[in-house]
Length: 165
Image 1 (cartoon, rainbow, N blue to C red):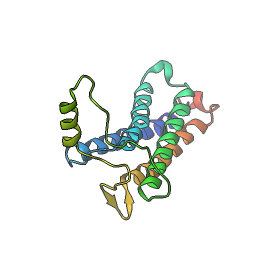
Image 2: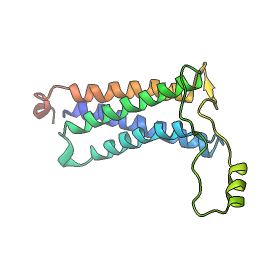
Image 3: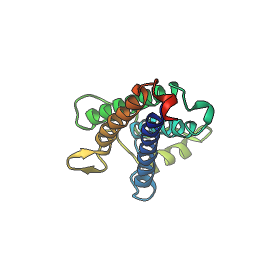
Image 4: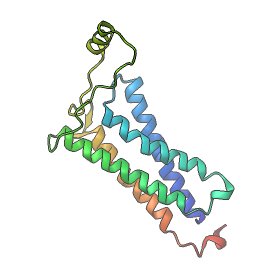
């Protein structure tokens, strides 16, 4: 991968890190509990940020697998974000469970108490929006942009790699 390609990949990885930190800030500072689909959308950004860290390893600098994996991760994130948008807008149904898992080893009374006191977060509810787009919509669009950066990093000509290093 060329120096310019590595810079594009690093920018894409930093974008994933920024989106992930933003989601965590909305959750922990803003008090917006995520639904299961929101959590699913975070994992590709964890992968994208980790791939950015892998770019720092000298042995992996020329690896075409990194931008390929980054592109795949952002395509998955964009798909999840756009799928979640469709669930929010009622275009299709989402997962049947949107309120978290059950605790093992609890008595019936303890389990009922945990269920009744658990915050219910539905995948159909829009917790935050800007300019008519939900967080899921923004994640889908931003992930498409980051996929474009990963693709550009992947498609940089390899022939100029030795000249630019």
